[in-house]
Every structure is written in structure tokens, then in C-alpha cells.
Image 1: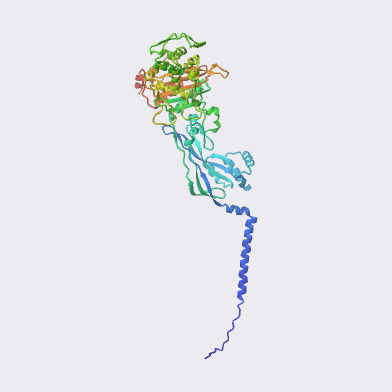
Image 2: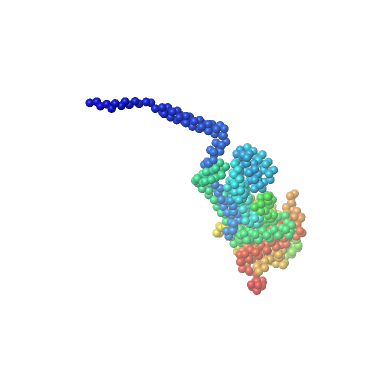
Length: 574
């Protein structure tokens, strides 16, 4: 059955659909046009903007500076340390004209005159890397960072600082602007002091500033510390007294070395003129040369104790022998003279009067090979081997090349050359009962190279003879130290002439001694080059400096006095 409602339904198309479609297409087209226009603007019309935005933050790998090892004295006092600094560099291609005012502010902070800074900018224009100033105080670097100058970058570094200043300048040397050792111990032990730089990945902003550490790629390895045998207290004392000697005698230069008589440790080494390694304006070669270690000279009469010891030890002279001098002695066609006619001398007076004739006779009584062997064993002609750059080896002609007169002049210190360090080392053989010590600038537990050169009784006899040199009748009364017995020897050496032979008005004033003479604790050698005030004898020029340094060293180390004639006075004062 069919049911009809009687209502007819008619469906007509909607007019809203086309409108919506066209509206949607219009919106999409407009958006595309806007985006395309923006892209064209950024890529074509504002490339600088795009570049800056793209570089706003980026990942970079940078070096990490390694800390250079410290140099310390034997008691741990710092002699050379590294302090953090900043270096400023520029990429000139990134500098904007709009930052000219900021650049001027940077120049003011750095203390650079505007005229000089403008010339610098002009000269370095176009370079991708150029240092503006290196090793500046971190506080100044922070002020410049606050200016936010595009193209200005900062580099972390270290600057070497020497707390003792000029006191130890010759010994320590210095580093260059890149923190690499150039002279002295800084150079000689660069391989130990130098660290190995590391690397890390960081995020930088558009101005090149590090804003975040991402990761360590390679850890920086700091350098090792270097502990020296030097005692800063004695080093300062030696520096002060040597400077006084140079000023008092208006000398050209001078050197002084203090050794531990028991093991050869170098407790002090100073030279004049001095320089301060913290002041790079003073870095001139004639000032920073360590004369105590790199210069050599003829030691003169200071070798005479070794001649007497060699003759005694080898049985070539009896302890109670008497030697005739009488002012003049002929060796072949050559003549050896003394300052005075001393007549007949025993061995003690030979050293007390410093007779050239007597030691010549002793030297000529010994076989050349034996005599040469003693000098060689004492270290003459060989570097002391302390690892100091440019260290002198001196000279000692092989005995096979000697003429008759060579052996004679060697006995009073000509025809052989030595450094102050080598001469001080040789005297350890007298100070330590015949044992000659190797010398060291690095702290050690013992001396593995110590050698017995003379019999103990021979060395003790020589010390007793050398005490007479310090008496009123000797040549070095001004070397005495109150409360202590002192043994030592003077030398007054004519300097070699550039045209051959020797000068008659230029001298080296030398003194080497030890104390307490009963059991020496220290050996000190002093050389003053070309004193010009009229005095030039070693006992008048070099001995006073020895006396003051020795007195201070004995006091610092609390060494018990052995001078019995002054003991009651010392006890009364206490």
C-alpha cells in the first residue's frame, strides 16, 4: 500500500559554497604573497640582517690554555708564577662604522693614544686576525667586553710573574709574550714547565663571546713545578751585598755563588748588573746574562791551594818542606815573579803570601799527566752540568799539548779558565775533606757524583793553611766573620787584552772561601770585574762581600760558631 503525504520536497544548490571556496583561495594567495615578499626582502634586500640572525649563536671549538708550572725555592717559596690575563684581538672585516665611538672608548681603556689607535686601524684594515693588546688585566678586559663591539674578541692566557723581581732575574730568566721560556731556568726546563693546552666545544654569540660551555674535548694538562736548590733568603742577601760591592768600587760587573759545602746545592747565584724580569723594557742581553754561569775567566791565585794539595797528596812535597822563592824564578826563557821577595817559605806561608814562584816549583815537580788529572777531576775544562742554557765549560789544555811554561802558569791560575760556579765547585774538595761535589740547581736527596779527590787529612791541612790568609798578616783580613773560623784564598787577575797579552790597568778581584773552617757549611765565590776606584786586590774588593754574605748565611741556618777567641763575647751578648 502506498502512502502519500502530499508534500513535495525540492533540493536546490547552496550559494555559500563558491563564496567560501574563493574566500579560502584568496586568503591562501595573500599569505603566499606575504611570505614570498618577506623571503625576497630578507634574501635580497636585507642580507646583512639575515647573516647576523644566522650567526646569532653558533657552536665553536676553542683552545684552553694550560697553566705553566711554578718555579719555587728549596723551601717552597714561589719564584715564578703564572697569573691569568686576557688578550684582545680583532677581525677587521667585521668592524662596523657605527662602532667607531666604542672603539675610541676601548683605546682609552687600554691607554692607547687616539692618534696611534687610528693609525693601527688603518694599517691593519682588512685583516681577519690582529692583536690589539696582549696580556691585559682581566678587569680591563671586562670593561671592554661591556662595550659589546662586533669584531672584537678575547683570548684567555697567562702572564709570568716573578715575586723576587731582580733578585733572581739572572737565574730564572723569563718567558716571551707566548709564555715560552727564553732565558735562564725558564728556557732550560721549558719541557718540564710547559703545559699541554686542551680543547673544548662552546656556544658563541654573534659577537664571538662565549656564552656557554658545551663539552670538554681534551683536558688541558698543567706544567710541572720546578723546585730549585736556591734559598730565597740567601739569594736576596747575596744580591744586596754584590750590588753594594759594584757600587762602592764602580765596577763593570760582578758575580757571586753560594754552595752547600756538603752536597753541592746552589743556594744562591747572582750577577750584576741586574735586571727585573717583570719589566720587559730592561730585557737587554748585556743585562740578563748570568755571568756566574756563562762567563769564564782565568782564576789566578785562587787555584794555588789545589797545587799545594796535589803535591802533598802525591808525595811530591813533604808537609814540613821549605821552599826558596827570592823574588824571581826562571822557567826556560820565561820568568816567574812574586810581588815581593818572600825568601824561604813553608807551605802555609806559600798560600798566605800567595807566592807564584813557590807554586811554580811545586807544579814543575809533578808529572804533567798527574797535575792535569787533578785539575780535570776538580771540574776545570768541563761544564758543571746544572742544565743552565749557555753554561760555560771553561778551558783546560790537555797535558799532551803543554810546553814547559804552560805547567808553570797553570799553577797560579793562568792558561786555564773557569766560571764562578765551577770555581766554587772545585773548592768543595777542600771544604768537604777531599770530596768534590757535583753542583745542582734542582733539589735532590744526595749527590750521586761526589768523588774523593784528595785524602781527608790533606784537605784539612789545606783548610788550616787557608785560615792564615784571613789573618792580619794574610791577604784577606776583610773576609773574616765574627765568631767563626774562615778559610779562603784571594785572587787578583790581570785581564786579557783584545790585542794579545794582558792589560796593566784592568783587573778581576776574586775571593773564594768557606766557613766554619773546622767543618765548612758553605762555600762562597765572589768575582768583581774591573773595579775603578783604585782598589783592585781580591782581599779588598771581593772579600768584604764574601764576609757579609757568609755571616748572614751562617745566621740564617743557625750554624754553631767555631771561633773560640770570640765565643765568650757571643755568650755574654745572649
